[in-house]
Image 1 (cartoon, each protein chain N blue to C red):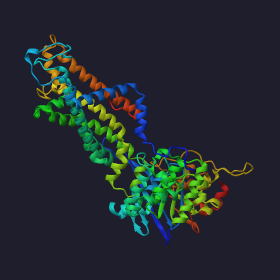
Image 2: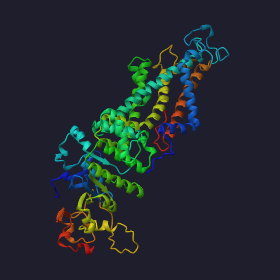
Image 3: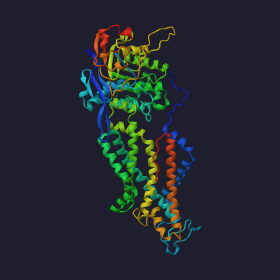
Image 4: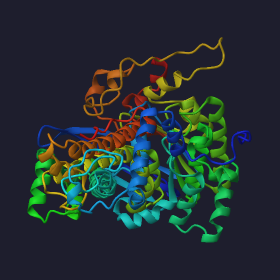
Length: 296
Length: 334
């Protein structure tokens, strides 16, 4: 066998470069990525972008419609809505990423253990996730939030805790199929211990659908935080959470619809962005891969 | 049962049953007898071929013999030490003595790891070489199997099937084993590549004094590399003898049928073709008596009643057929 001299000497990055190539051709996914990019930039650099202090109450300027001075109008305390939406992006991002990461960690841990070891431990974990799936997620969230002090930290953990079973199921399925591969048996044959075997050989080969689910999970978490805050169980005033902005704006729905409309659009666009990107990522990672359900 | 004192590995009554579970409470309804009481021994430096149709349990036999699949029953002695009595830690230590090469060169390499990563991981596992020598040893291993040291930085998808198989061989060699189970290592390869890989395996055997269990479904491949051959049918060994004896003087009707299926590159060649009727019976529901009797061209009534065991019919030539001994003409009748 001749060594392949004409083929590139440098090793390709493999999966991730291929994925990026395919992703670039997907317009919807790129649109999603642009939205996510804007959201992150604006959220991280909020003080630079926001024209006003989002907490500054100016009662004489309350409920002003969109104008050149206040592009998206002001709310019932005279606070600039654009500035509040910009600061709200921070919160949404934080909730999305932290809650989805908690869900990712728990889901991967339990899913991997269930899938790899099987037997009774698999049964216990999977029956528990079945029970979790039995509850409507929002109802469960409301229950948790009502039981603890409603603030953002509680929101992170509550959403993470409610959404890990989905991640665990995906992970378990992946582990079940990946562990049947000969390279896993080859490593058992080499005398590899369970820990390194799982970390180096099984988990890296399970990641594709998990990353997609993570992206979609961010959208779900942002949505869930908005819902909770709308119900008054999430971020507490004066925190500029999009959900609570819609909540307080609903009293002025007829007279000042911009109070609800603009935060609503922000939520919609953000969730759309993550979902489009997640969809594209799923197609790009593997066109034949099983479809994780879209965030609702 | 065939036994020799200078054997490296000795297998006795190896069984692997897969339970069939049904119903709400997963009650065991029966067993798939994938490997049903297999015994053999392999001498140091020898190559034992294990052949049989798909589904006859040869792969399961190879894997349970390394305890990669937990055998249901039996004894496996490696250099006189009983593998079945070992706990996980002892077994892990033993693993560096016995390795396996897989059939599918695409499934046997972790797609997320570079070749160098795989090999150095294996080296670190058993502290084969000092840390600072690992890179050198990886290069040396790649060279041994006919690859270039610069391949170490590549991922499996950048290689052809034959090259991947070489990587699999390098991985098996990395821990300096004494014994390698070659699980149909060439079945998935091109014919031209098959010869290269077989030659490589033979060269390595000479160089490192390796002992092989060579699993194949094709007697013609086995002929080139094996000293002795065991023929498996439905989880049992039906014939075991020197390769020459198997090819020139097969005793079991199943072996004869397998041999007659080897194509001969001579259009004028006339031979008796033994065509087996029907399919291999399900190992979940094995026939009574001799497992082979429903398909055997020379079966008689008694065959469905009397269980068959390997017997030494000629020196160093075992077969499990009641007529092979009584009736030397079985061959002609077929």
